[in-house]
Length: 489
Ligand code: FAD
Image (cartoon, rainbow, N blue to C red):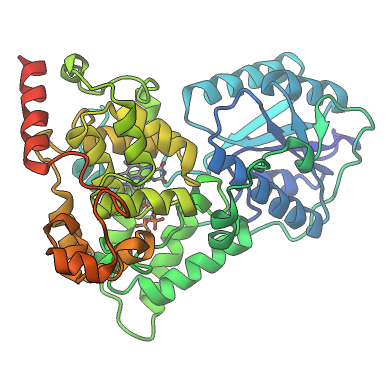
């Protein structure tokens, strides 16, 4: 990182290799490349072997288009390449013979392996390779117990993070990039159009288009709106799924349109300078939620098999049920439990689901239906615009009870009580399960408890216009506890 580029590099360019960090501001790799004063070539590789879900493919299309436009406006060019990452990057380095290459670090095992192979290639070919911390508040190995070990309990980890003080201040975007000439022939060179990331037949993305606008500029708008309108009251209202009660920044963080350091510092600034009082409880609660994202990555860093393996091995003996019809009812939002169905339909339509409801639907799948958490995690991976390899599996394992610092298995969420508590007016249910909207509020949470007259007046015919519950709560709860007891002996 101390490489000096002045004088010895001639007209050679430097390369910035972008991955999940599609932003100009607070991008240490881009910042360092621009500081060399040499021509900069920006590169993104789309690897077909990368397991991207359909919703994240949709997001990536918009993200790349927005980022290309920002880089062009800054005087640069973003080259989009397609193919196996290592081979493509070696070809870029061979063809361009750059003075150096810059990237921001990744923490998944597969990605780390690719990055170190590219670093080895650079070493063998005397190309300076520099990597930076950019996508977390603190890199996994920097947060340690007093004995130098790793935390397994979130509260202790968070306390240690707070004792470390504020993360580094965000860097400004480069004012201007000096663009490098692009060679005529480069392996895998393609366009965003040719990547064909968007769904065609059928085009199911109308709901996503209506809801989301990928890109750095929009990320900043969302952050500003959240800090102005929603941060105040966050600690008490964040569990309410109706309306906007959280930041909805997760897909922007997932693709790196925004860094967590930017969010951290902007939040603190907003609280200090607000014209009205925003309580520290709101600020601290929000920052600690942001911390969960780092915690998930530090777990995945230590346990790269987290997507396939129970963190707690006693769960290996759990006898999950193989009931495809039940899984389909869950995935389509047809379980007969309105809050669960509202959540699954919100996910299907918009590519996102409120956190409280994610917990309820995950608990319903793993405990009421006794279906393996890995199947639920795969469905989320495919349908969430914020699908994140670390946060997704950590949270699924947390809800299922098999994870680190997890909710105990015997805590089976009651979907009706959750609904009454967190969607008391039924607004969220009415929005995503409109066939129930004329029921009285009390019955919205459990339509099978409505009187025949109420059902008739609301135009609801259970089993026809809306399903009867696919499983009875008390029975499901006892079955889940028995399965857990049997598996742990
Ligand atoms: P806010 O409440 O505004 O929080 C701000 C940011 O903090 C979020 O954008 C997110 O980056 C982070 N954050 C908040 N809660 C969590 C959490 N529990 N775990 C990790 N990070 C958190 N989040 C993802 O980003 N990707 C996933 O694939 C994902 N899968 C999940 C699966 C399940 C079963 C559950 C229960 C939760 C999952 N989450 C996931 C966590 C959480 O639901 C989302 O981060 C949150 O709903 C995003 O909304 P927001 O940006 O408005 O959150």
